[in-house]
Length: 176
Image (tube, rainbow, N blue to C red; front, top):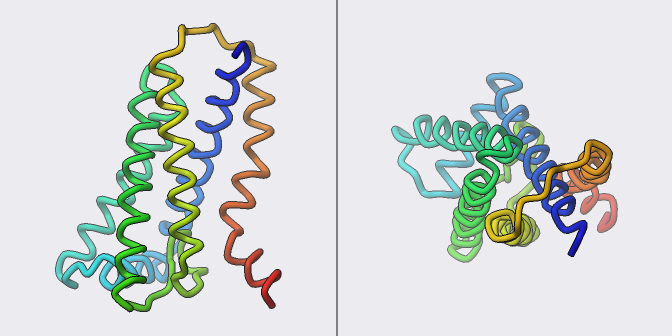
């Protein structure tokens, strides 16, 4: 497909935006970081003594995804890293829900809602998009990007990022 590489760019921008929003939300203030560390303890069943280190590692991976998915030379690595990270997130959330551990989803910082299956579905869908984009980026012949096409992909990704980041607010609005 002639324009499939711009769809890949759109996925790259979407993932960068989502991971950047997640990282910024956690780094916004001490309360947001503490909420995330607490969620790590509950959701991933990490001992309290390790929660800070695990939380810092997660934020490091989120930062790495933001950078690597946007750099053309590392985008395949970044997309694979994003797919793997989102798969781990989905598995941890699913395990917590299945075992009855209740926590808030502090995915985007202090503003959080109760952990729900929609968070697992969100991460699975994003992981699938990242994996598909990685496959295309790795296997398709390279095409020099046109500035207008890349700009269009970035603009198209913006409302998608907003919808993903606002998932809990939208859910609350719809379900009352």
